[in-house]
Picture 1 (cartoon, rainbow, N blue to C red):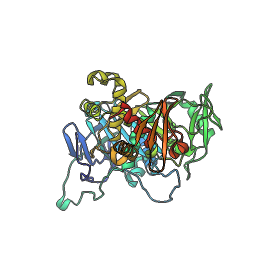
Picture 2: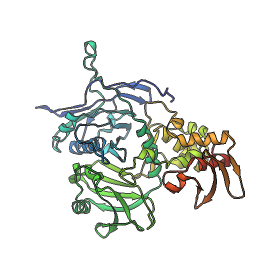
Picture 3: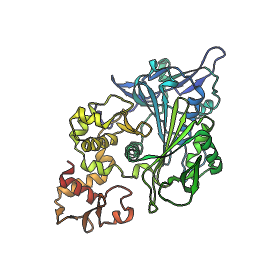
Length: 457
């Protein structure tokens, strides 16, 4: 479904709120903005209105999300409540709530699973939900024994005279969030399970780690699986898992007592690894909380460039074909998608990367599969958010790429560069490659070579 990129965005009918009653269940109302549903664009959609079996889990998980979204772990700015409204996707059997930290270096996702909700009341679609300071405070008072009805969307739609109940705060998803959503799914899809421990072992490790909620990102270290838990190490080594900034996991203390198990995912690590991304997944009763940390506290996900290699190969028609097959599925199997679309597996993976640039897919490490979300904003963000790809296409248009014997020569703005295949990727002689060594994705010269070699469009 295509929408103009400059489309106006809706505000909220009211602020999200929690109401405790003397008799009957309390009511937690999470106000929605403009949403995209199977019926198209809907202002203030209702994605869930029913009973929550573990109110304490839902409340504590949302508090984690709020803390992440309102925190700058790098160069913190004291004071104020600067939360950015989380994205919520209803998928028929669960609710996924996603947010990035204010510094863009921590991604958090809370999955409220059907076993903790009344599945009959779950809908389909994606929107933003209002999170405000009074609500964050009220969430702290919701306990396990408290009966609770959750409304994702207004529990009733009221339009008072002069729209006096309508919140004037407009909702606009930051472009860096959209870029970061693409990067996190690409990074996650290349990870494997590195450690699996129970809640007791996790709490023992967390206590020894001493991750606090103070300012700053905390020290960077590596952890190694060991019998009965994890142990710390000061350097990268085979089998180690990165923990770049211990305080960036501090929001987990909100659910610490609820953690049943912890899974840690990371790419293959060697002693030469300079920086790596890890995902820490916390199993809660009827829910999962996942947190991905960027390779360094000062690095935001929006600038990682991991998705660019796939974009250089992708064919836009493939992405359009795949988009027509998606329907807010909680798990997308690329093999099934390839069969339905009659496309080779590599082209499906590259097309999924294109869809990710518009926020249409994410990756769930626990289920080892993609999931569908669809942001209610304009879709064509390749030129806007990926200037390197735009520059690569311009190099081709200018005839700046020449083929050599086993390499390519690219005439750039500041010199002539040689692009050569090396260890499964293209290596360039430009300054960008020398500085980042492939850790921020391919340079524009390597992208241009990808495009001209027939691996992309």
